[in-house]
Structure formats: structure tokens, C-alpha cells
Length: 372
Image (tube, rainbow, N blue to C red; front, side, top):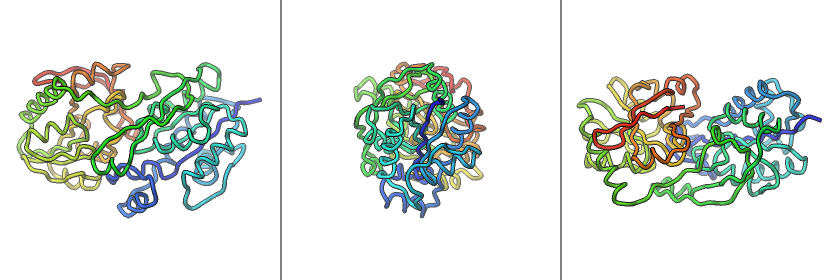
């Protein structure tokens, strides 16, 4: 008998990213995202997973959620599901995710794959606990948990290897944050529990970690900020990503930084605060521009996690060669494996960003790090 794999898609996961909402938990956030022109991204991420899975494994029965919770994605890839669970609905909720997860558990899936972010991971954890192996396809704004593959293609390869018996399952952390606090610029990460996931260190992301608030670390950030501010060119636009290291740069310029958002500056003044994708594109049009980002602690992502406002369209408009990466010595030395990651959702842009890049780690000092 072939293996049984469950696929559950949260169709609204990640919609708030490009429009700068930092999440779509709750009906009001979703309504606002749609008003700002947000488009679903999770279905396409699920299709990317399914296409690679079809190339990687034979004779697996696919159980899916109804409608855009997995069924439509499978059919569009030419895959006829072995079973469709739940009901087709114009709007889905956390309750649907939990109910379908519970039914997949009852039907004995060998692996439950879900497409979403940390909120979806929490819902799956609430439903199945550690009773069955699970795997996340990253598609949310908040993707801090250690239950996700680094991208949809790698998720499919992990799933195939696990179903062939090549990988064991281990406990991995499910984290989440308060979106209201996040939108207000406060980051409080909480451990909610654990899911059992395939053990594959190189293709699974790690949990987000927060750096220590100690004087040596803060001085390192200030030194980076002084150096970057001296490199800034008159007339150029700088798109500055979230984080405390990038905040130090705007502090050096005497400007207020949106800690968890993206800001745009030129010639010592703020052009756009907490900017979304559209605002960034308008700000850089017709001007030389650079992007300044810092990797997520513990994970190493420089694009595709928490800064989706800097979209593939923004990166193409500015040019992948015009990306400046800044990080403290501690952050770079703590990366395991020692690499940076990109997952923009556009393979062409990701490919252009991959390779080796110079990372500013102190005043006048750089480290060469591989981007994968």
C-alpha cells in the first residue's frame, strides 16, 4: 500500500506581507489587506510544492482540504486527490484548519503537510499535537517556527525522503507572536509547543532567535551604523529593512526607524515610513537605489521572512547587485550552517541573489558569506 500524505493550505496566509500589514490573523487584518490590494500567495506556494513532490515520489495517495485548502491546488497541477476533506467555503478559518487536521489524523496520514505561517502551525499543533509527523511549507508573513522547510521545493524533497523512510521525525518548536503588538513595533516571541517534523538540518529552517541586549552587541551595531552612513551616497534612495541592526543606521542619521517595518530614506530624510511594496516602488522609481537588510537571527534569511514588502519586483527594480547586508559578528558566527537564505517566491530573483556576498560586520570590516 502506498503512503498517505495530507495537504492542508491556509489560502490567506502571507497576504499581509507585501502591503505592510505583517500578518493576516483575524477578519479585520484580512479585510484591510484586501483593501490595500493584497493577493493570495499561499495557493501558488502549495502548487510549487505539489509539482516538485510529483517529480520526487511515486505511489503516494494525497488527502486534501476542500476548495482552496488543497483541492484546487492539486487539481490545477493535474493531481486527482485520493480524498477531499471538509467543505468548500468562500472564507476559511482556524476552525477549518483544525477540523481538517483532525480528520487527516483519523485517516492515518503518514505525513501532514500544511502551507501557511506560524498561525497555521499553531492550529495544526492544536489539532494533532505530536500524534503524527507534520511539515510546513512557508507561506506566511510570520515564519519563525522550526517546523518549516526553507522553501516549497525543499519541502517536497524532505517529504519524499521522509515517506521513503530515509528520515526520522524529531520534535520542533512552534512559535508565534501577537500580531497587534507586532504591528505596533513590539516583537514578543512565545513558544507554544512542538510538532513532530522530518529531521533534515540542511533543508529545514531553524527557529528565530533574538540577540542579547548587551553593550558589546550594541556597540557592534553602532559601529556598523557609522560605517554604512559614511558609505551612503547623495541622491541615492535607501530601502532599509526591519531589525535592530538596521535601526542603528537610522539612529545614526537622526531618523526614527520602524523596528519591524521597512523605511525609505534619501539625503538624510525619510521618504516613506513603514512602507509597503507599492510605496517602495514609487520611491525608487527613476533614482539610484540600494537595499539594506539584516539576516533573521538563528535562521539567516535576508529576504522572504518578515520583509516581504521588499518583494521580487522591488529587488528587480533596484537590482540584486545593489543589496547591502549588515549583521553583527555574533549573528553571523551563530548561523548553523554558516549561510544566508533567500525565499522571495520568485525563483529567478532567488537565483540572482544566490552565491557569495560581502556582509558588513563592523566598522570597515566585512565577512564573505554564501547565500543559498
